[in-house]
Length: 136
Picture 1: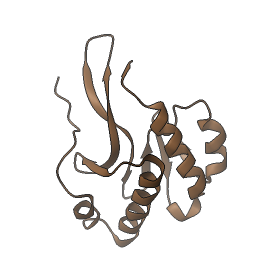
Picture 2: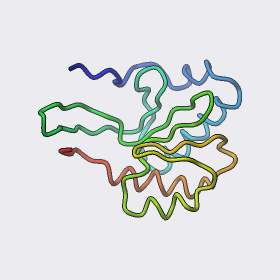
Picture 3: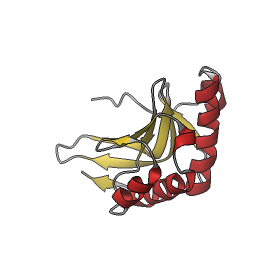
Picture 4: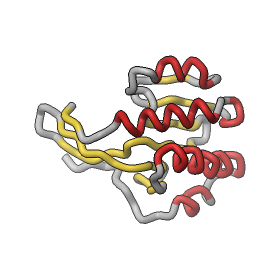
C-alpha cells in the first residue's frame, strides 16, 4: 500500500497564502512555536499539513512508512496539532493548555489566542523527543 501523505516541495508560505487571514497568521505563529521547540524547519506534508522532522515506523504486519515527528494543520474549523499526546507527561500539560479537544493522535484548538503558547511549546518539545523510529 502506498503512503498517501508525504513530504512535498511546496513552500509553507505558499500554503498559508491560500488560507483566510486568521488561519494564515496562526499558521505563521505556530511555525515559530514549533521551530523554537524542535530546532527543525517546516515541511509541507500533502496539501495541508505542516510537519517538523520525520520518523519511520513498521507495523507487525510488515507495513512501514514515514511520518512527521510533530506538526499541525490549520483547518477551517480548528487547528489540528499532531504528535503531542504520546509522552507520559502530556496529560498534565494538556490540562494547562487551555480550551481544546483531543484524540489518540491529535489535539484540536479553535483559536490559537485561547491557549497557553508556553505550554504548547513544552508539548511540542516532548512530542519531538518521544517520536523516533519505531515498531508499532
